[in-house]
Each structure stands twice: as structure tokens, then as C-alpha cells.
Length: 306
Image 1 (cartoon, rainbow, N blue to C red):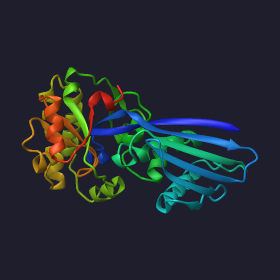
Image 2 (image 1 turned 45 degrees about the vertical axis):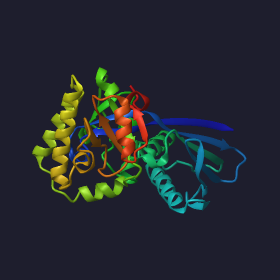
Image 3 (image 1 turned 120 degrees about the horizontal axis):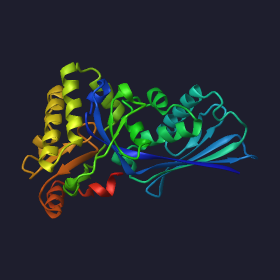
Image 4 (image 1 turned 180 degrees about the vertical axis):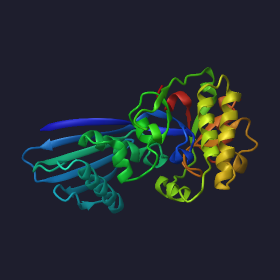
């Protein structure tokens, strides 16, 4: 039995959301949590792929695929089986020899985080499959989910990044470690945005070169913030630009304007995770979020790879 294992980090996009698709430099951070992909090859197999996916130790998908066609044979989650089949077929288009032998294989994936959290379940899968097939993960992403690729860069980085699609193969790794991190939290809103849908919507909006340049400069200022107030000011400036372009209020103005500090959407607006920054004590932050029905809360150091 032959055995191989791959691992990729989850991600959070702090600044440059949406505009990163048009060339703006974004600030992104890899997470301590991610996803592994384990492959076992059985020489005396039946030319099938058996795939099992876990999230936080619990099975959420199981299916079998024909190895020659890469089509689903049976599964307990049809839509995901079809998407996974598409990814495997696109992988073969980038590596003609991928899964072309007659051996049966067993694939097991393990997500460290809840699959509904939007921390990179898709990007870590793409990165791991690309490792497995020895192909370019950015090309595989382009052929499957689409997007800027910042999440792929995070999947393979051990430090924070300034990321631009124009330099995606060489993102600038940055040192981002400040005392005010103890005043930063991340929380899950309890709902999930579909990134591919948000990308399609935003691509219909006209973006100016000035907006792209402005957000790029904000991303660079963020990493040089000397205190929490400077950091929050950068987040506000980023949100003001995106708010005007989307013609949509910031989440802070909509729901949290009485908060002592600042709350920012991360990634596509309206779902997934928020960043919470405040000089107040942790007890105040947690009580405030709990009153708004938000209970999944992380300290910065608990989530971020640094």
C-alpha cells in the first residue's frame, strides 16, 4: 500500500476584498487551522476512488468515483460529488497522467474547522489536490472556483501576505506581530457567502484605477500600524471605499455602530467571519457579540498562524 499526505492552511482576507480581483494589493493572513488530504493506493484494487471528508472529526461527505472517467458512482451528497468530479477532471486536464493507472485509491480529507465557516474549505482542497497531482494550484483554481488566488497563496504560506494577482506567484510575505493583537478578535456571523456568486456580481461593477491604488496603499499601511487606533482607521478607510463601490452600508454602520471599537466584514460582505477590534476588555467584547447572537469567537492568537 502506497501512502501520501498533503496539508494547506486556511485563510482570512483583512483588506482589499473585491478589489483584489482587479489588481489591488490585499492584506491576507494564513490560519493555524487548515485541511489535510491523505491518499492510499491499493495495488490489488478495483479501479475506483473512495472519498471520505471530515470536518472537525465528523464525516460530512462520502462517495465513490470511477477512476477512468472521474465521474461519481454513488455518494451521500450529490452536488458536492459533482463538484468534486469536476475538480478531478480539471486536474487531469492539467496533468494527463493523473489517476490513469488501474489501482484503487482511498482519499480522506480532514478539515480542522467547521465547513460552514468560510475559512478556506475550497481553497485548501484545491491546494492539496494540486500538491497531489503536481500541478499549478492557481491554474486549478482558475478552472474550478475562480477568484484572485489570495486564498491559495495563504494555503501555502507560513506568514501574513501582501497579495496581488499581478504577482501571485511571489506574494510579499510580511511580519505582522503587534502588542495590540490582544485587542483583536474574529467571530463567525452564523451564515456563509458563496464566493463564486459574489465574484460574478462584483465583476459587473466598474472599478476605477484610483480606487485600486487607494486600497493598495491602505493594505500597506495596515501592516505598519503602530497602535490599535491606526489599525482601525485603516479598516474604516478600506470599508469606505468598498461601501461606495458596492452602494452598500458597512456592517459596522448597519448593525454595530454603538460598539466601542470597530467591526469589519472579512471577504465577501454579508457572511462568514468578522474582525472585531476594541480597546475594551474581552468580557465587554464577548457580551456585546453574544447580545447580537454571535457566539463563535476567537482571540487573534487562537486563529492566526504567525
